[in-house]
Length: 309
Image 1: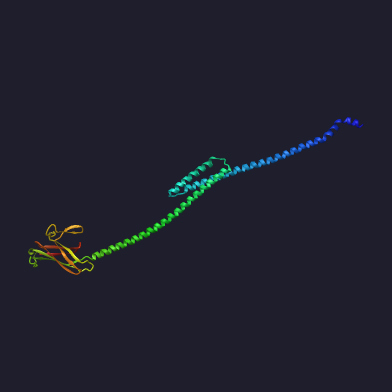
Image 2: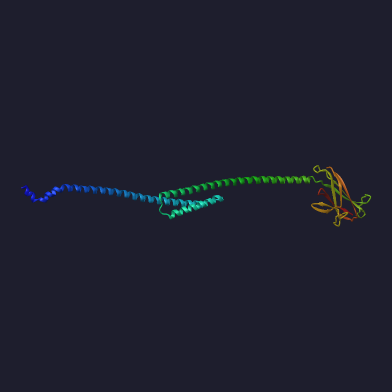
């Protein structure tokens, strides 16, 4: 009877006999699929992370590049604003300005930089900034020195001007004192007289009767004057405004010019005391006004007018 049943359901028993191995295979496939799914998931996560990291790195490099570009532009503006009269610093700044322009051109032209390139560019910008700051400090230092020197120069000039003013005042005072001494040392003549005389030294009251003139005066005492022999010159101008003279060569120097004298004496020995002096001139005379002038030591030391009848 069992045989009949088995014969009646042959496929059923065959399927039931194969069911165990088939399930095992299916389970194996499922496990493999699950593992593959997990691996794919892990790879997907890693890929996603790497993509995000790359995106973040590119964005960071872009930010770094833009930051460097802004810093460099500001540095160039700072360089352009630096003013100095020092030729060496000015030339060096021009060189650094050219380098900064080259770096800025590179930053603007290249869009994709590696981290090492950005790092190198950052170092170059930092170096340029440090150099520029150094020049600014040098310029500030030179400006302070120049201002100090300018203040010292102004102070020196003020002191020099004050000293010059004092020296000029002292010189002026010295010259004034010297002039006073010089004027004070001049020997003056007083009591100047003109007398008409005959050959026998007799005084006459008529000019036409006179054969010579006697000019007499007194040299004043002067303790400031030097003593010793002197030349004394007398100029007598007649009524016709002509200076009386014995010859055309009767000349002496006065104020840089040669002028005519009427009479002169070279043996006047002055010793600082009052000294009477007399000089004579021979000739013919007419009535009228006569002007007498006395000269000694380069000065006109006295004058007077006389009327001869």
